[in-house]
Image (cartoon, rainbow, N blue to C red; front, side, top):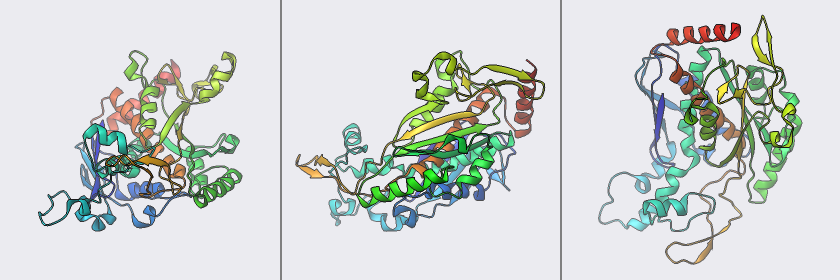
Length: 393
């Protein structure tokens, strides 16, 4: 299974095509729009979310609410494009129009963005040609793709949830989610402004976000994705590029502004002894093999253990600041203070939805790589057979 996305931040639409999905599982616009709305929410979002009301159209691969087995095409229209038709249009400009005026020529790269290096790489003197595609706006359609992946996983008894664990050093108490299911965690965070399961920490996060916005600054944080219901043995140890944790890490770091990833206790493992890191194996008739703890986050040797998968990603503060940083104009080579395109004081809550989506897709992809899956009933049968086999191994 794979997907491609296309589209620019101020272009007419964002498009994704997913290839390799099995037939006969439910996909509807309503379930995808639910996740798109979650991505637009969260305290700290900027003016763009007041302009765009992201809604998906399913233009192929689904009939009467069920997948066909053919490629699924998803389209999210940019309502704001009507204000950018001349600036971002695909047609050549008429000869009587000044190109610099229409394009809003951008020669001033913003620190922390792809502007300068992207211009160097592709030879663009107008850096709008870079910033339009490198914008986090592209994650909109990746959330749509992830929503489809989650729909498939639910049919297999696998559930995915994300939540915010930290913003600018303010940490949620992990005990607030201890022992709770993915559905129970989701019910808590959907009522929270920061998508955080700790109300006390969330209140402090709101204050910190408001303070950063007032100062013209931005702040980052940490998000956690939990996948429950995975059978043991998804992934492989036999090749470096088949290890599931490697694939998940790449997916997490592919999200705009994400700079770190960890599984289970993650970097804390460097500060502990081996006896305080590894998970003891236990067995009982009801559950089969489990672990006494889950410090490794449900992964051993690049494979799932059957315990909940726990992966966290670190998001840096958004680099577009209302308190601008210094840069250099590529035409004049003169210094300047970087301009604001559009910005959020904090996008960590929204980014948790993106993280949930990309992790869900990689998990679904790994399952489909391992099992023959032209149609859902075949896949369900094979997953149940794997669960039964590993339980009695």
